[in-house]
Each structure stands twice: as C-alpha cells, then as structure tokens.
Amino acid sequence: MPKIFGSSLLGILLASLALYMLGFIWYGILFEDLWISLSGISKEAAQTNMESMGAMGFVWGIIITLAQVLGLAYILNHANAARLGTCVKIGAIIATLIALPVMAYNVLYGGSSAKLLGLDYAHLLIGYAIACAILSLFRRRGALASEA
Image (cartoon, rainbow, N blue to C red; front, top):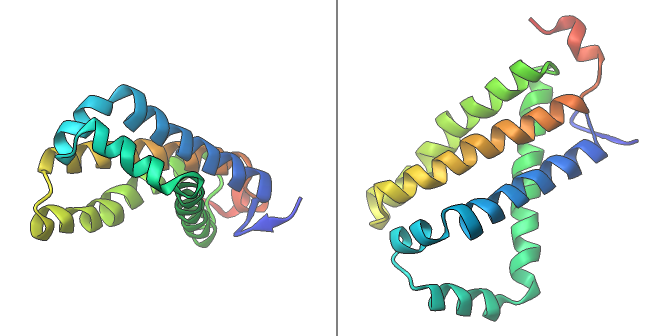
C-alpha cells in the first residue's frame, strides 16, 4: 500500500471518512438546531444552500476534509509519531493552537458568535483526535523505535 507522509493511503482515506462522518453527525444530527441558531440562518436557508450546491457541496466537503487529514499526516510524519497517545495529543494540539486561533478571526472580525466558535472547536478537537488515532494505526512502524 502506498504511503503518504508515512501513513498508508488506506489510513488517510479512513481518517478522512471518519472526520467527514463526524461532521455530518455533529452538525446534521447532534447539534443541528444549535448550529442553525448560532449561525444565524434558518433551516430553510441552509437546505436551499445545500440544494444549490448539489453534489459539489459534498465533493468540496470531502476535499476540505482530505486536505485537513493530509495536514495532520504531514505533521505526524514530521514529528515521527506513531504511538496512539502521541498522535492523539498532536491532533489536540493542532486543533487548539492552529485551528482554534484561525477560527477565532471570524469571531473577532467577522461578527460570528463565540458560542459557534466553541461548537466548531469542539468538533475539530474531537475530529482531529479521532483522525490522528486512525492515522496512528497506519503509520510506519519504524517511527515507534525513535519516538519518545
């Protein structure tokens, strides 16, 4: 199986699928009403937006998710991380020190809700931890020997 940033292609695809499905469950089932109210749009407007994008909405969602997982895999590879705990910790750090501050710009300058930021951050914190956990299962085993 080909490797991308020290992780097998299968691991990249499974981590991407898991992160994508978490987003569907998070925003489409568990916190749909909260997300709708915090984002300031109606359910009808959200539905209309999804319908107007058609299949491309899903395609772009998958591409964005894949890009995030590739970024996680790159950082895990650079850190030479393969152990489950180390990979999950790195995912949590990335969510907290990179994703959260980037999303905070929208609160500071875009008028978005701090509560929405919290909902989005929790999604990425859990999602990155899960994706990194999956990637750890598909990391090259040579990394284990040198990992602290």
